[in-house]
Structure formats: C-alpha cells, structure tokens
Length: 247
Length: 247
Figure 1 (cartoon, rainbow over the protein chains, first blue to last red):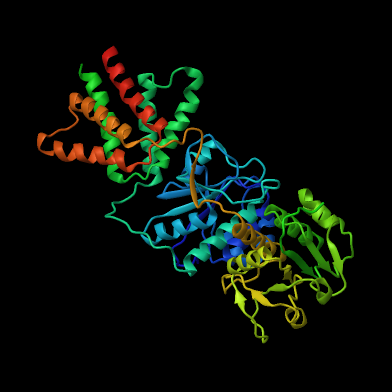
Figure 2 (cartoon, chains in turn green, cyan; figure 1 turned 60 degrees about the vertical axis):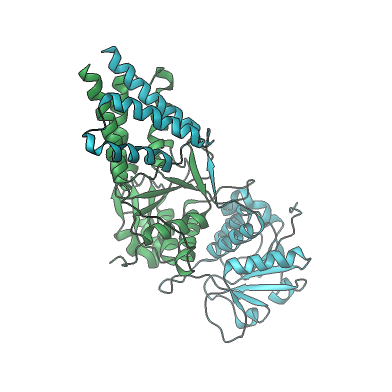
C-alpha cells in the first residue's frame, strides 16, 4: 500500500531503460516518495529489468500508475513541474530543485495535487510535454557536462522534497484562496479557445499556426487559474461567438 | 588537466564495482568537481568498467590519485568529512550535506584543503576510516529505506557543493519573450475586453454586471502576463470581432 503522506507524483514520460525506471523508484523511496506515474514505457510493462534494479523499492513499480499521454498523466493535478535542462522557447518560470520542491510542499500543504515530470532518457521532453507544465525545474549543473541521467534527476528532486518537508518549510503569506482549476479543465479551456479561434481564422499565416497554438496552450497552463477563472474565460469566448452569430 | 577551481577532493575508499566508480566520476563532473582520490580499488586500476560508465567524465579517472590507505589519502587535508548513514560509537559532529558542503566552501575559501570520504559499497566505512574524519555527513534519507548507493551519495554531495559555490536564483522567468507587461498594458487589456464584452452583452444580468466586471479586471491583474501574452489576448479579441463582422 502507498504511504498516506501527501506528496508529489513523479511522472516518468516515455522512459526507455528498465534499469533507469528501477533506479528512479529506489531514489524516490530513499527519500520517502512512493507515487510513480509512467507514460508509454518503451519496453512495455511490467519490466523485469526495472524490478531487478528497484530491489527494496519494487513496491513502487507494482503500484505505478500507467497513462497513455502526458496530458492524462497530470490531468488531476493543480500544479505541474517539468524537469528539463535545455532552454526552450516557451515562457515559464524556472526554479531550482530546492525552490521548486519547497513550493511543491507548500502547495501540497494547502491541498493541491502536484506532479513532477521527467523526460525520456535521450531525447528529453517534447515541447508538447513542457506546455503541460506550470513551471520548470532546472538543476544547476556544470555547463561543461550537464548530462544528468533520469535516475539522478529523480534522486535530486526526491532529496529536495525530503529536505523541504523535514526542515521547516519557508513561510508564505497567502490571501483568501479559491479552488485552483485541475489540469483537465485548463486543457478543455485550451481546446475551446483553439477550436473557436481556428474557425475565426486566428492562426494565420499557416506557417506560424503551430507555434501560435503552442504558445496559446502554454499561456493557459502557465497561469494560476482558478475554476472561476476558467468559467469566465469560457464565458467570454462563448459570448463572443454568440455576438458574432447574432449580427 | 584538472580545473583550477579550489574544491574538495572526493575520496572513494576501497570501491568495489567499476561501474560505481565511473558513475561517481560522472556525478562529480556534473557539478564541476574533478579531484578524485581512490584507495585500494577491489578490481585493480585502471578499470575498464569504470571508464565505460564515466563516458564524458573519463578524464577524472585518468587523473585520479591512488593511495594505499585512508590515512594517506587525506594526509594533506585540513578538514575531512566522512559520509555515512549508520550511527557510530565515535563522537563527531554530524552535518547535513547542505551544511557540510557550505562549510567546506567556507574552509576552502580561506585556504584549507578539504576531503569528502565515501565508503565501499556493501560494508560501508570501518571505524578506522571514520576516525580519520573531522565530521560526518549524514544524508536525511527515509529511515525505512536508507540504502543510498555510492554514486548516489557522491552525486548529492557534488550537487550540494555546487549549490554552495554558485548563486543560482531560486526562480527566474525564461523563454523567448519574457518581458512582463507593465500595469498600464494590463489595464488597457482590461479596457479592451470590457468594452467589447459590453457590446457583446456579456455583463448580464444587469444586477451582476458590476461584480463580473470587477472579477474580469482582477483575473488579468492576477496573472503573470508578459507583453507577448497581452498582445496575444488583444489579438484574440480583435479576431473574434473581425469574425463576427465578416459574417
């Protein structure tokens, strides 16, 4: 059985080598984390090499949740971090592991669901994965040798999680808070805008359409939208269509 | 050639598996460390498995200094840390990795020579090794699953070293167009939406109009909008009006 401790889910996107999945499980459990999610493991599931490498943390693999896509894997989360070293064209806050996992602990403490995503070994994350994230975690590596492997990156994040929850977490003053939207609601908002704007001819010229769609998608994911915000943004778009149709 | 940066030596005591020595080299160089010392490697030296695992950090193995005993390996150092999870009968200061490597940075800054020792894979350090140390580094692991491997322990200490000596901002905004919008731009965005939505009949019923306007205004102010975001949001609204006018 998973522990009861509220904690971030660690999401391995399309992991390739079973050994790395097993080592990631070990690294998580070394620091008390046991919620692993996986999308599309290259060599199928279950994976015997993962089991062999996980040794004492094999339970995490038995209980790992499998998803068909990045969006599905984080659909129920309110805040999502992407671990990636490479600079991207998408605008995002970039946090150190320490700041990010401290932030995650604060969010989890007030009832949000949080996920940390890790890209596949060689290729790393696609822009489409990163567009699902609220923020980026960047490990401050040696620029001359920045190649952290998957399990190392998981280990460092798990370590920072434990540091954040066993030390006194930094205080934060908050005003009155309303319920944050879940990722699936933000995704539907993105769909709604994209469909209507497609009809409206917004994504023009054709050559720039892809980048515009991605940036718009990213705009929504990056915003700390409440459920009420999402409803209002839907309402705005519906009303604009209604207005158009009325004339 | 080793880098000129003053830094701690990482000392692997009687390491067993070449793979772990290679992975330790990688972990060190990931965080800018390149002074490895080794005592009595079980499988001799050089070790081809270590070389294969080290890939981009192979230089550290070529330059590693070999010693016959723990005492010799740290003979020229002023301050020595022993990494060990297990409680010992020897009385020592016990530090977290963060505190220890920050302390190491301070010492090195004033000209001391510092070493961090790592025990062999299975047995761990002997009391005779620990007796050579000035202080102990204890990684705050999950007590239910405390078994960090050699390379993981090296990685965490190297990571904490780099954190101690580099000044990475906890959070920054990255991407192509990261310039935040000024308040006046957000205000104009609010005006634009309010005017158009007024025409479109969005603020209905009348009795709720005031609250709806206020909430919409507040939605924009609360978002971390960049200039590019503001332009896109203007564009969306203009396009919806254009679409309406076209039909």
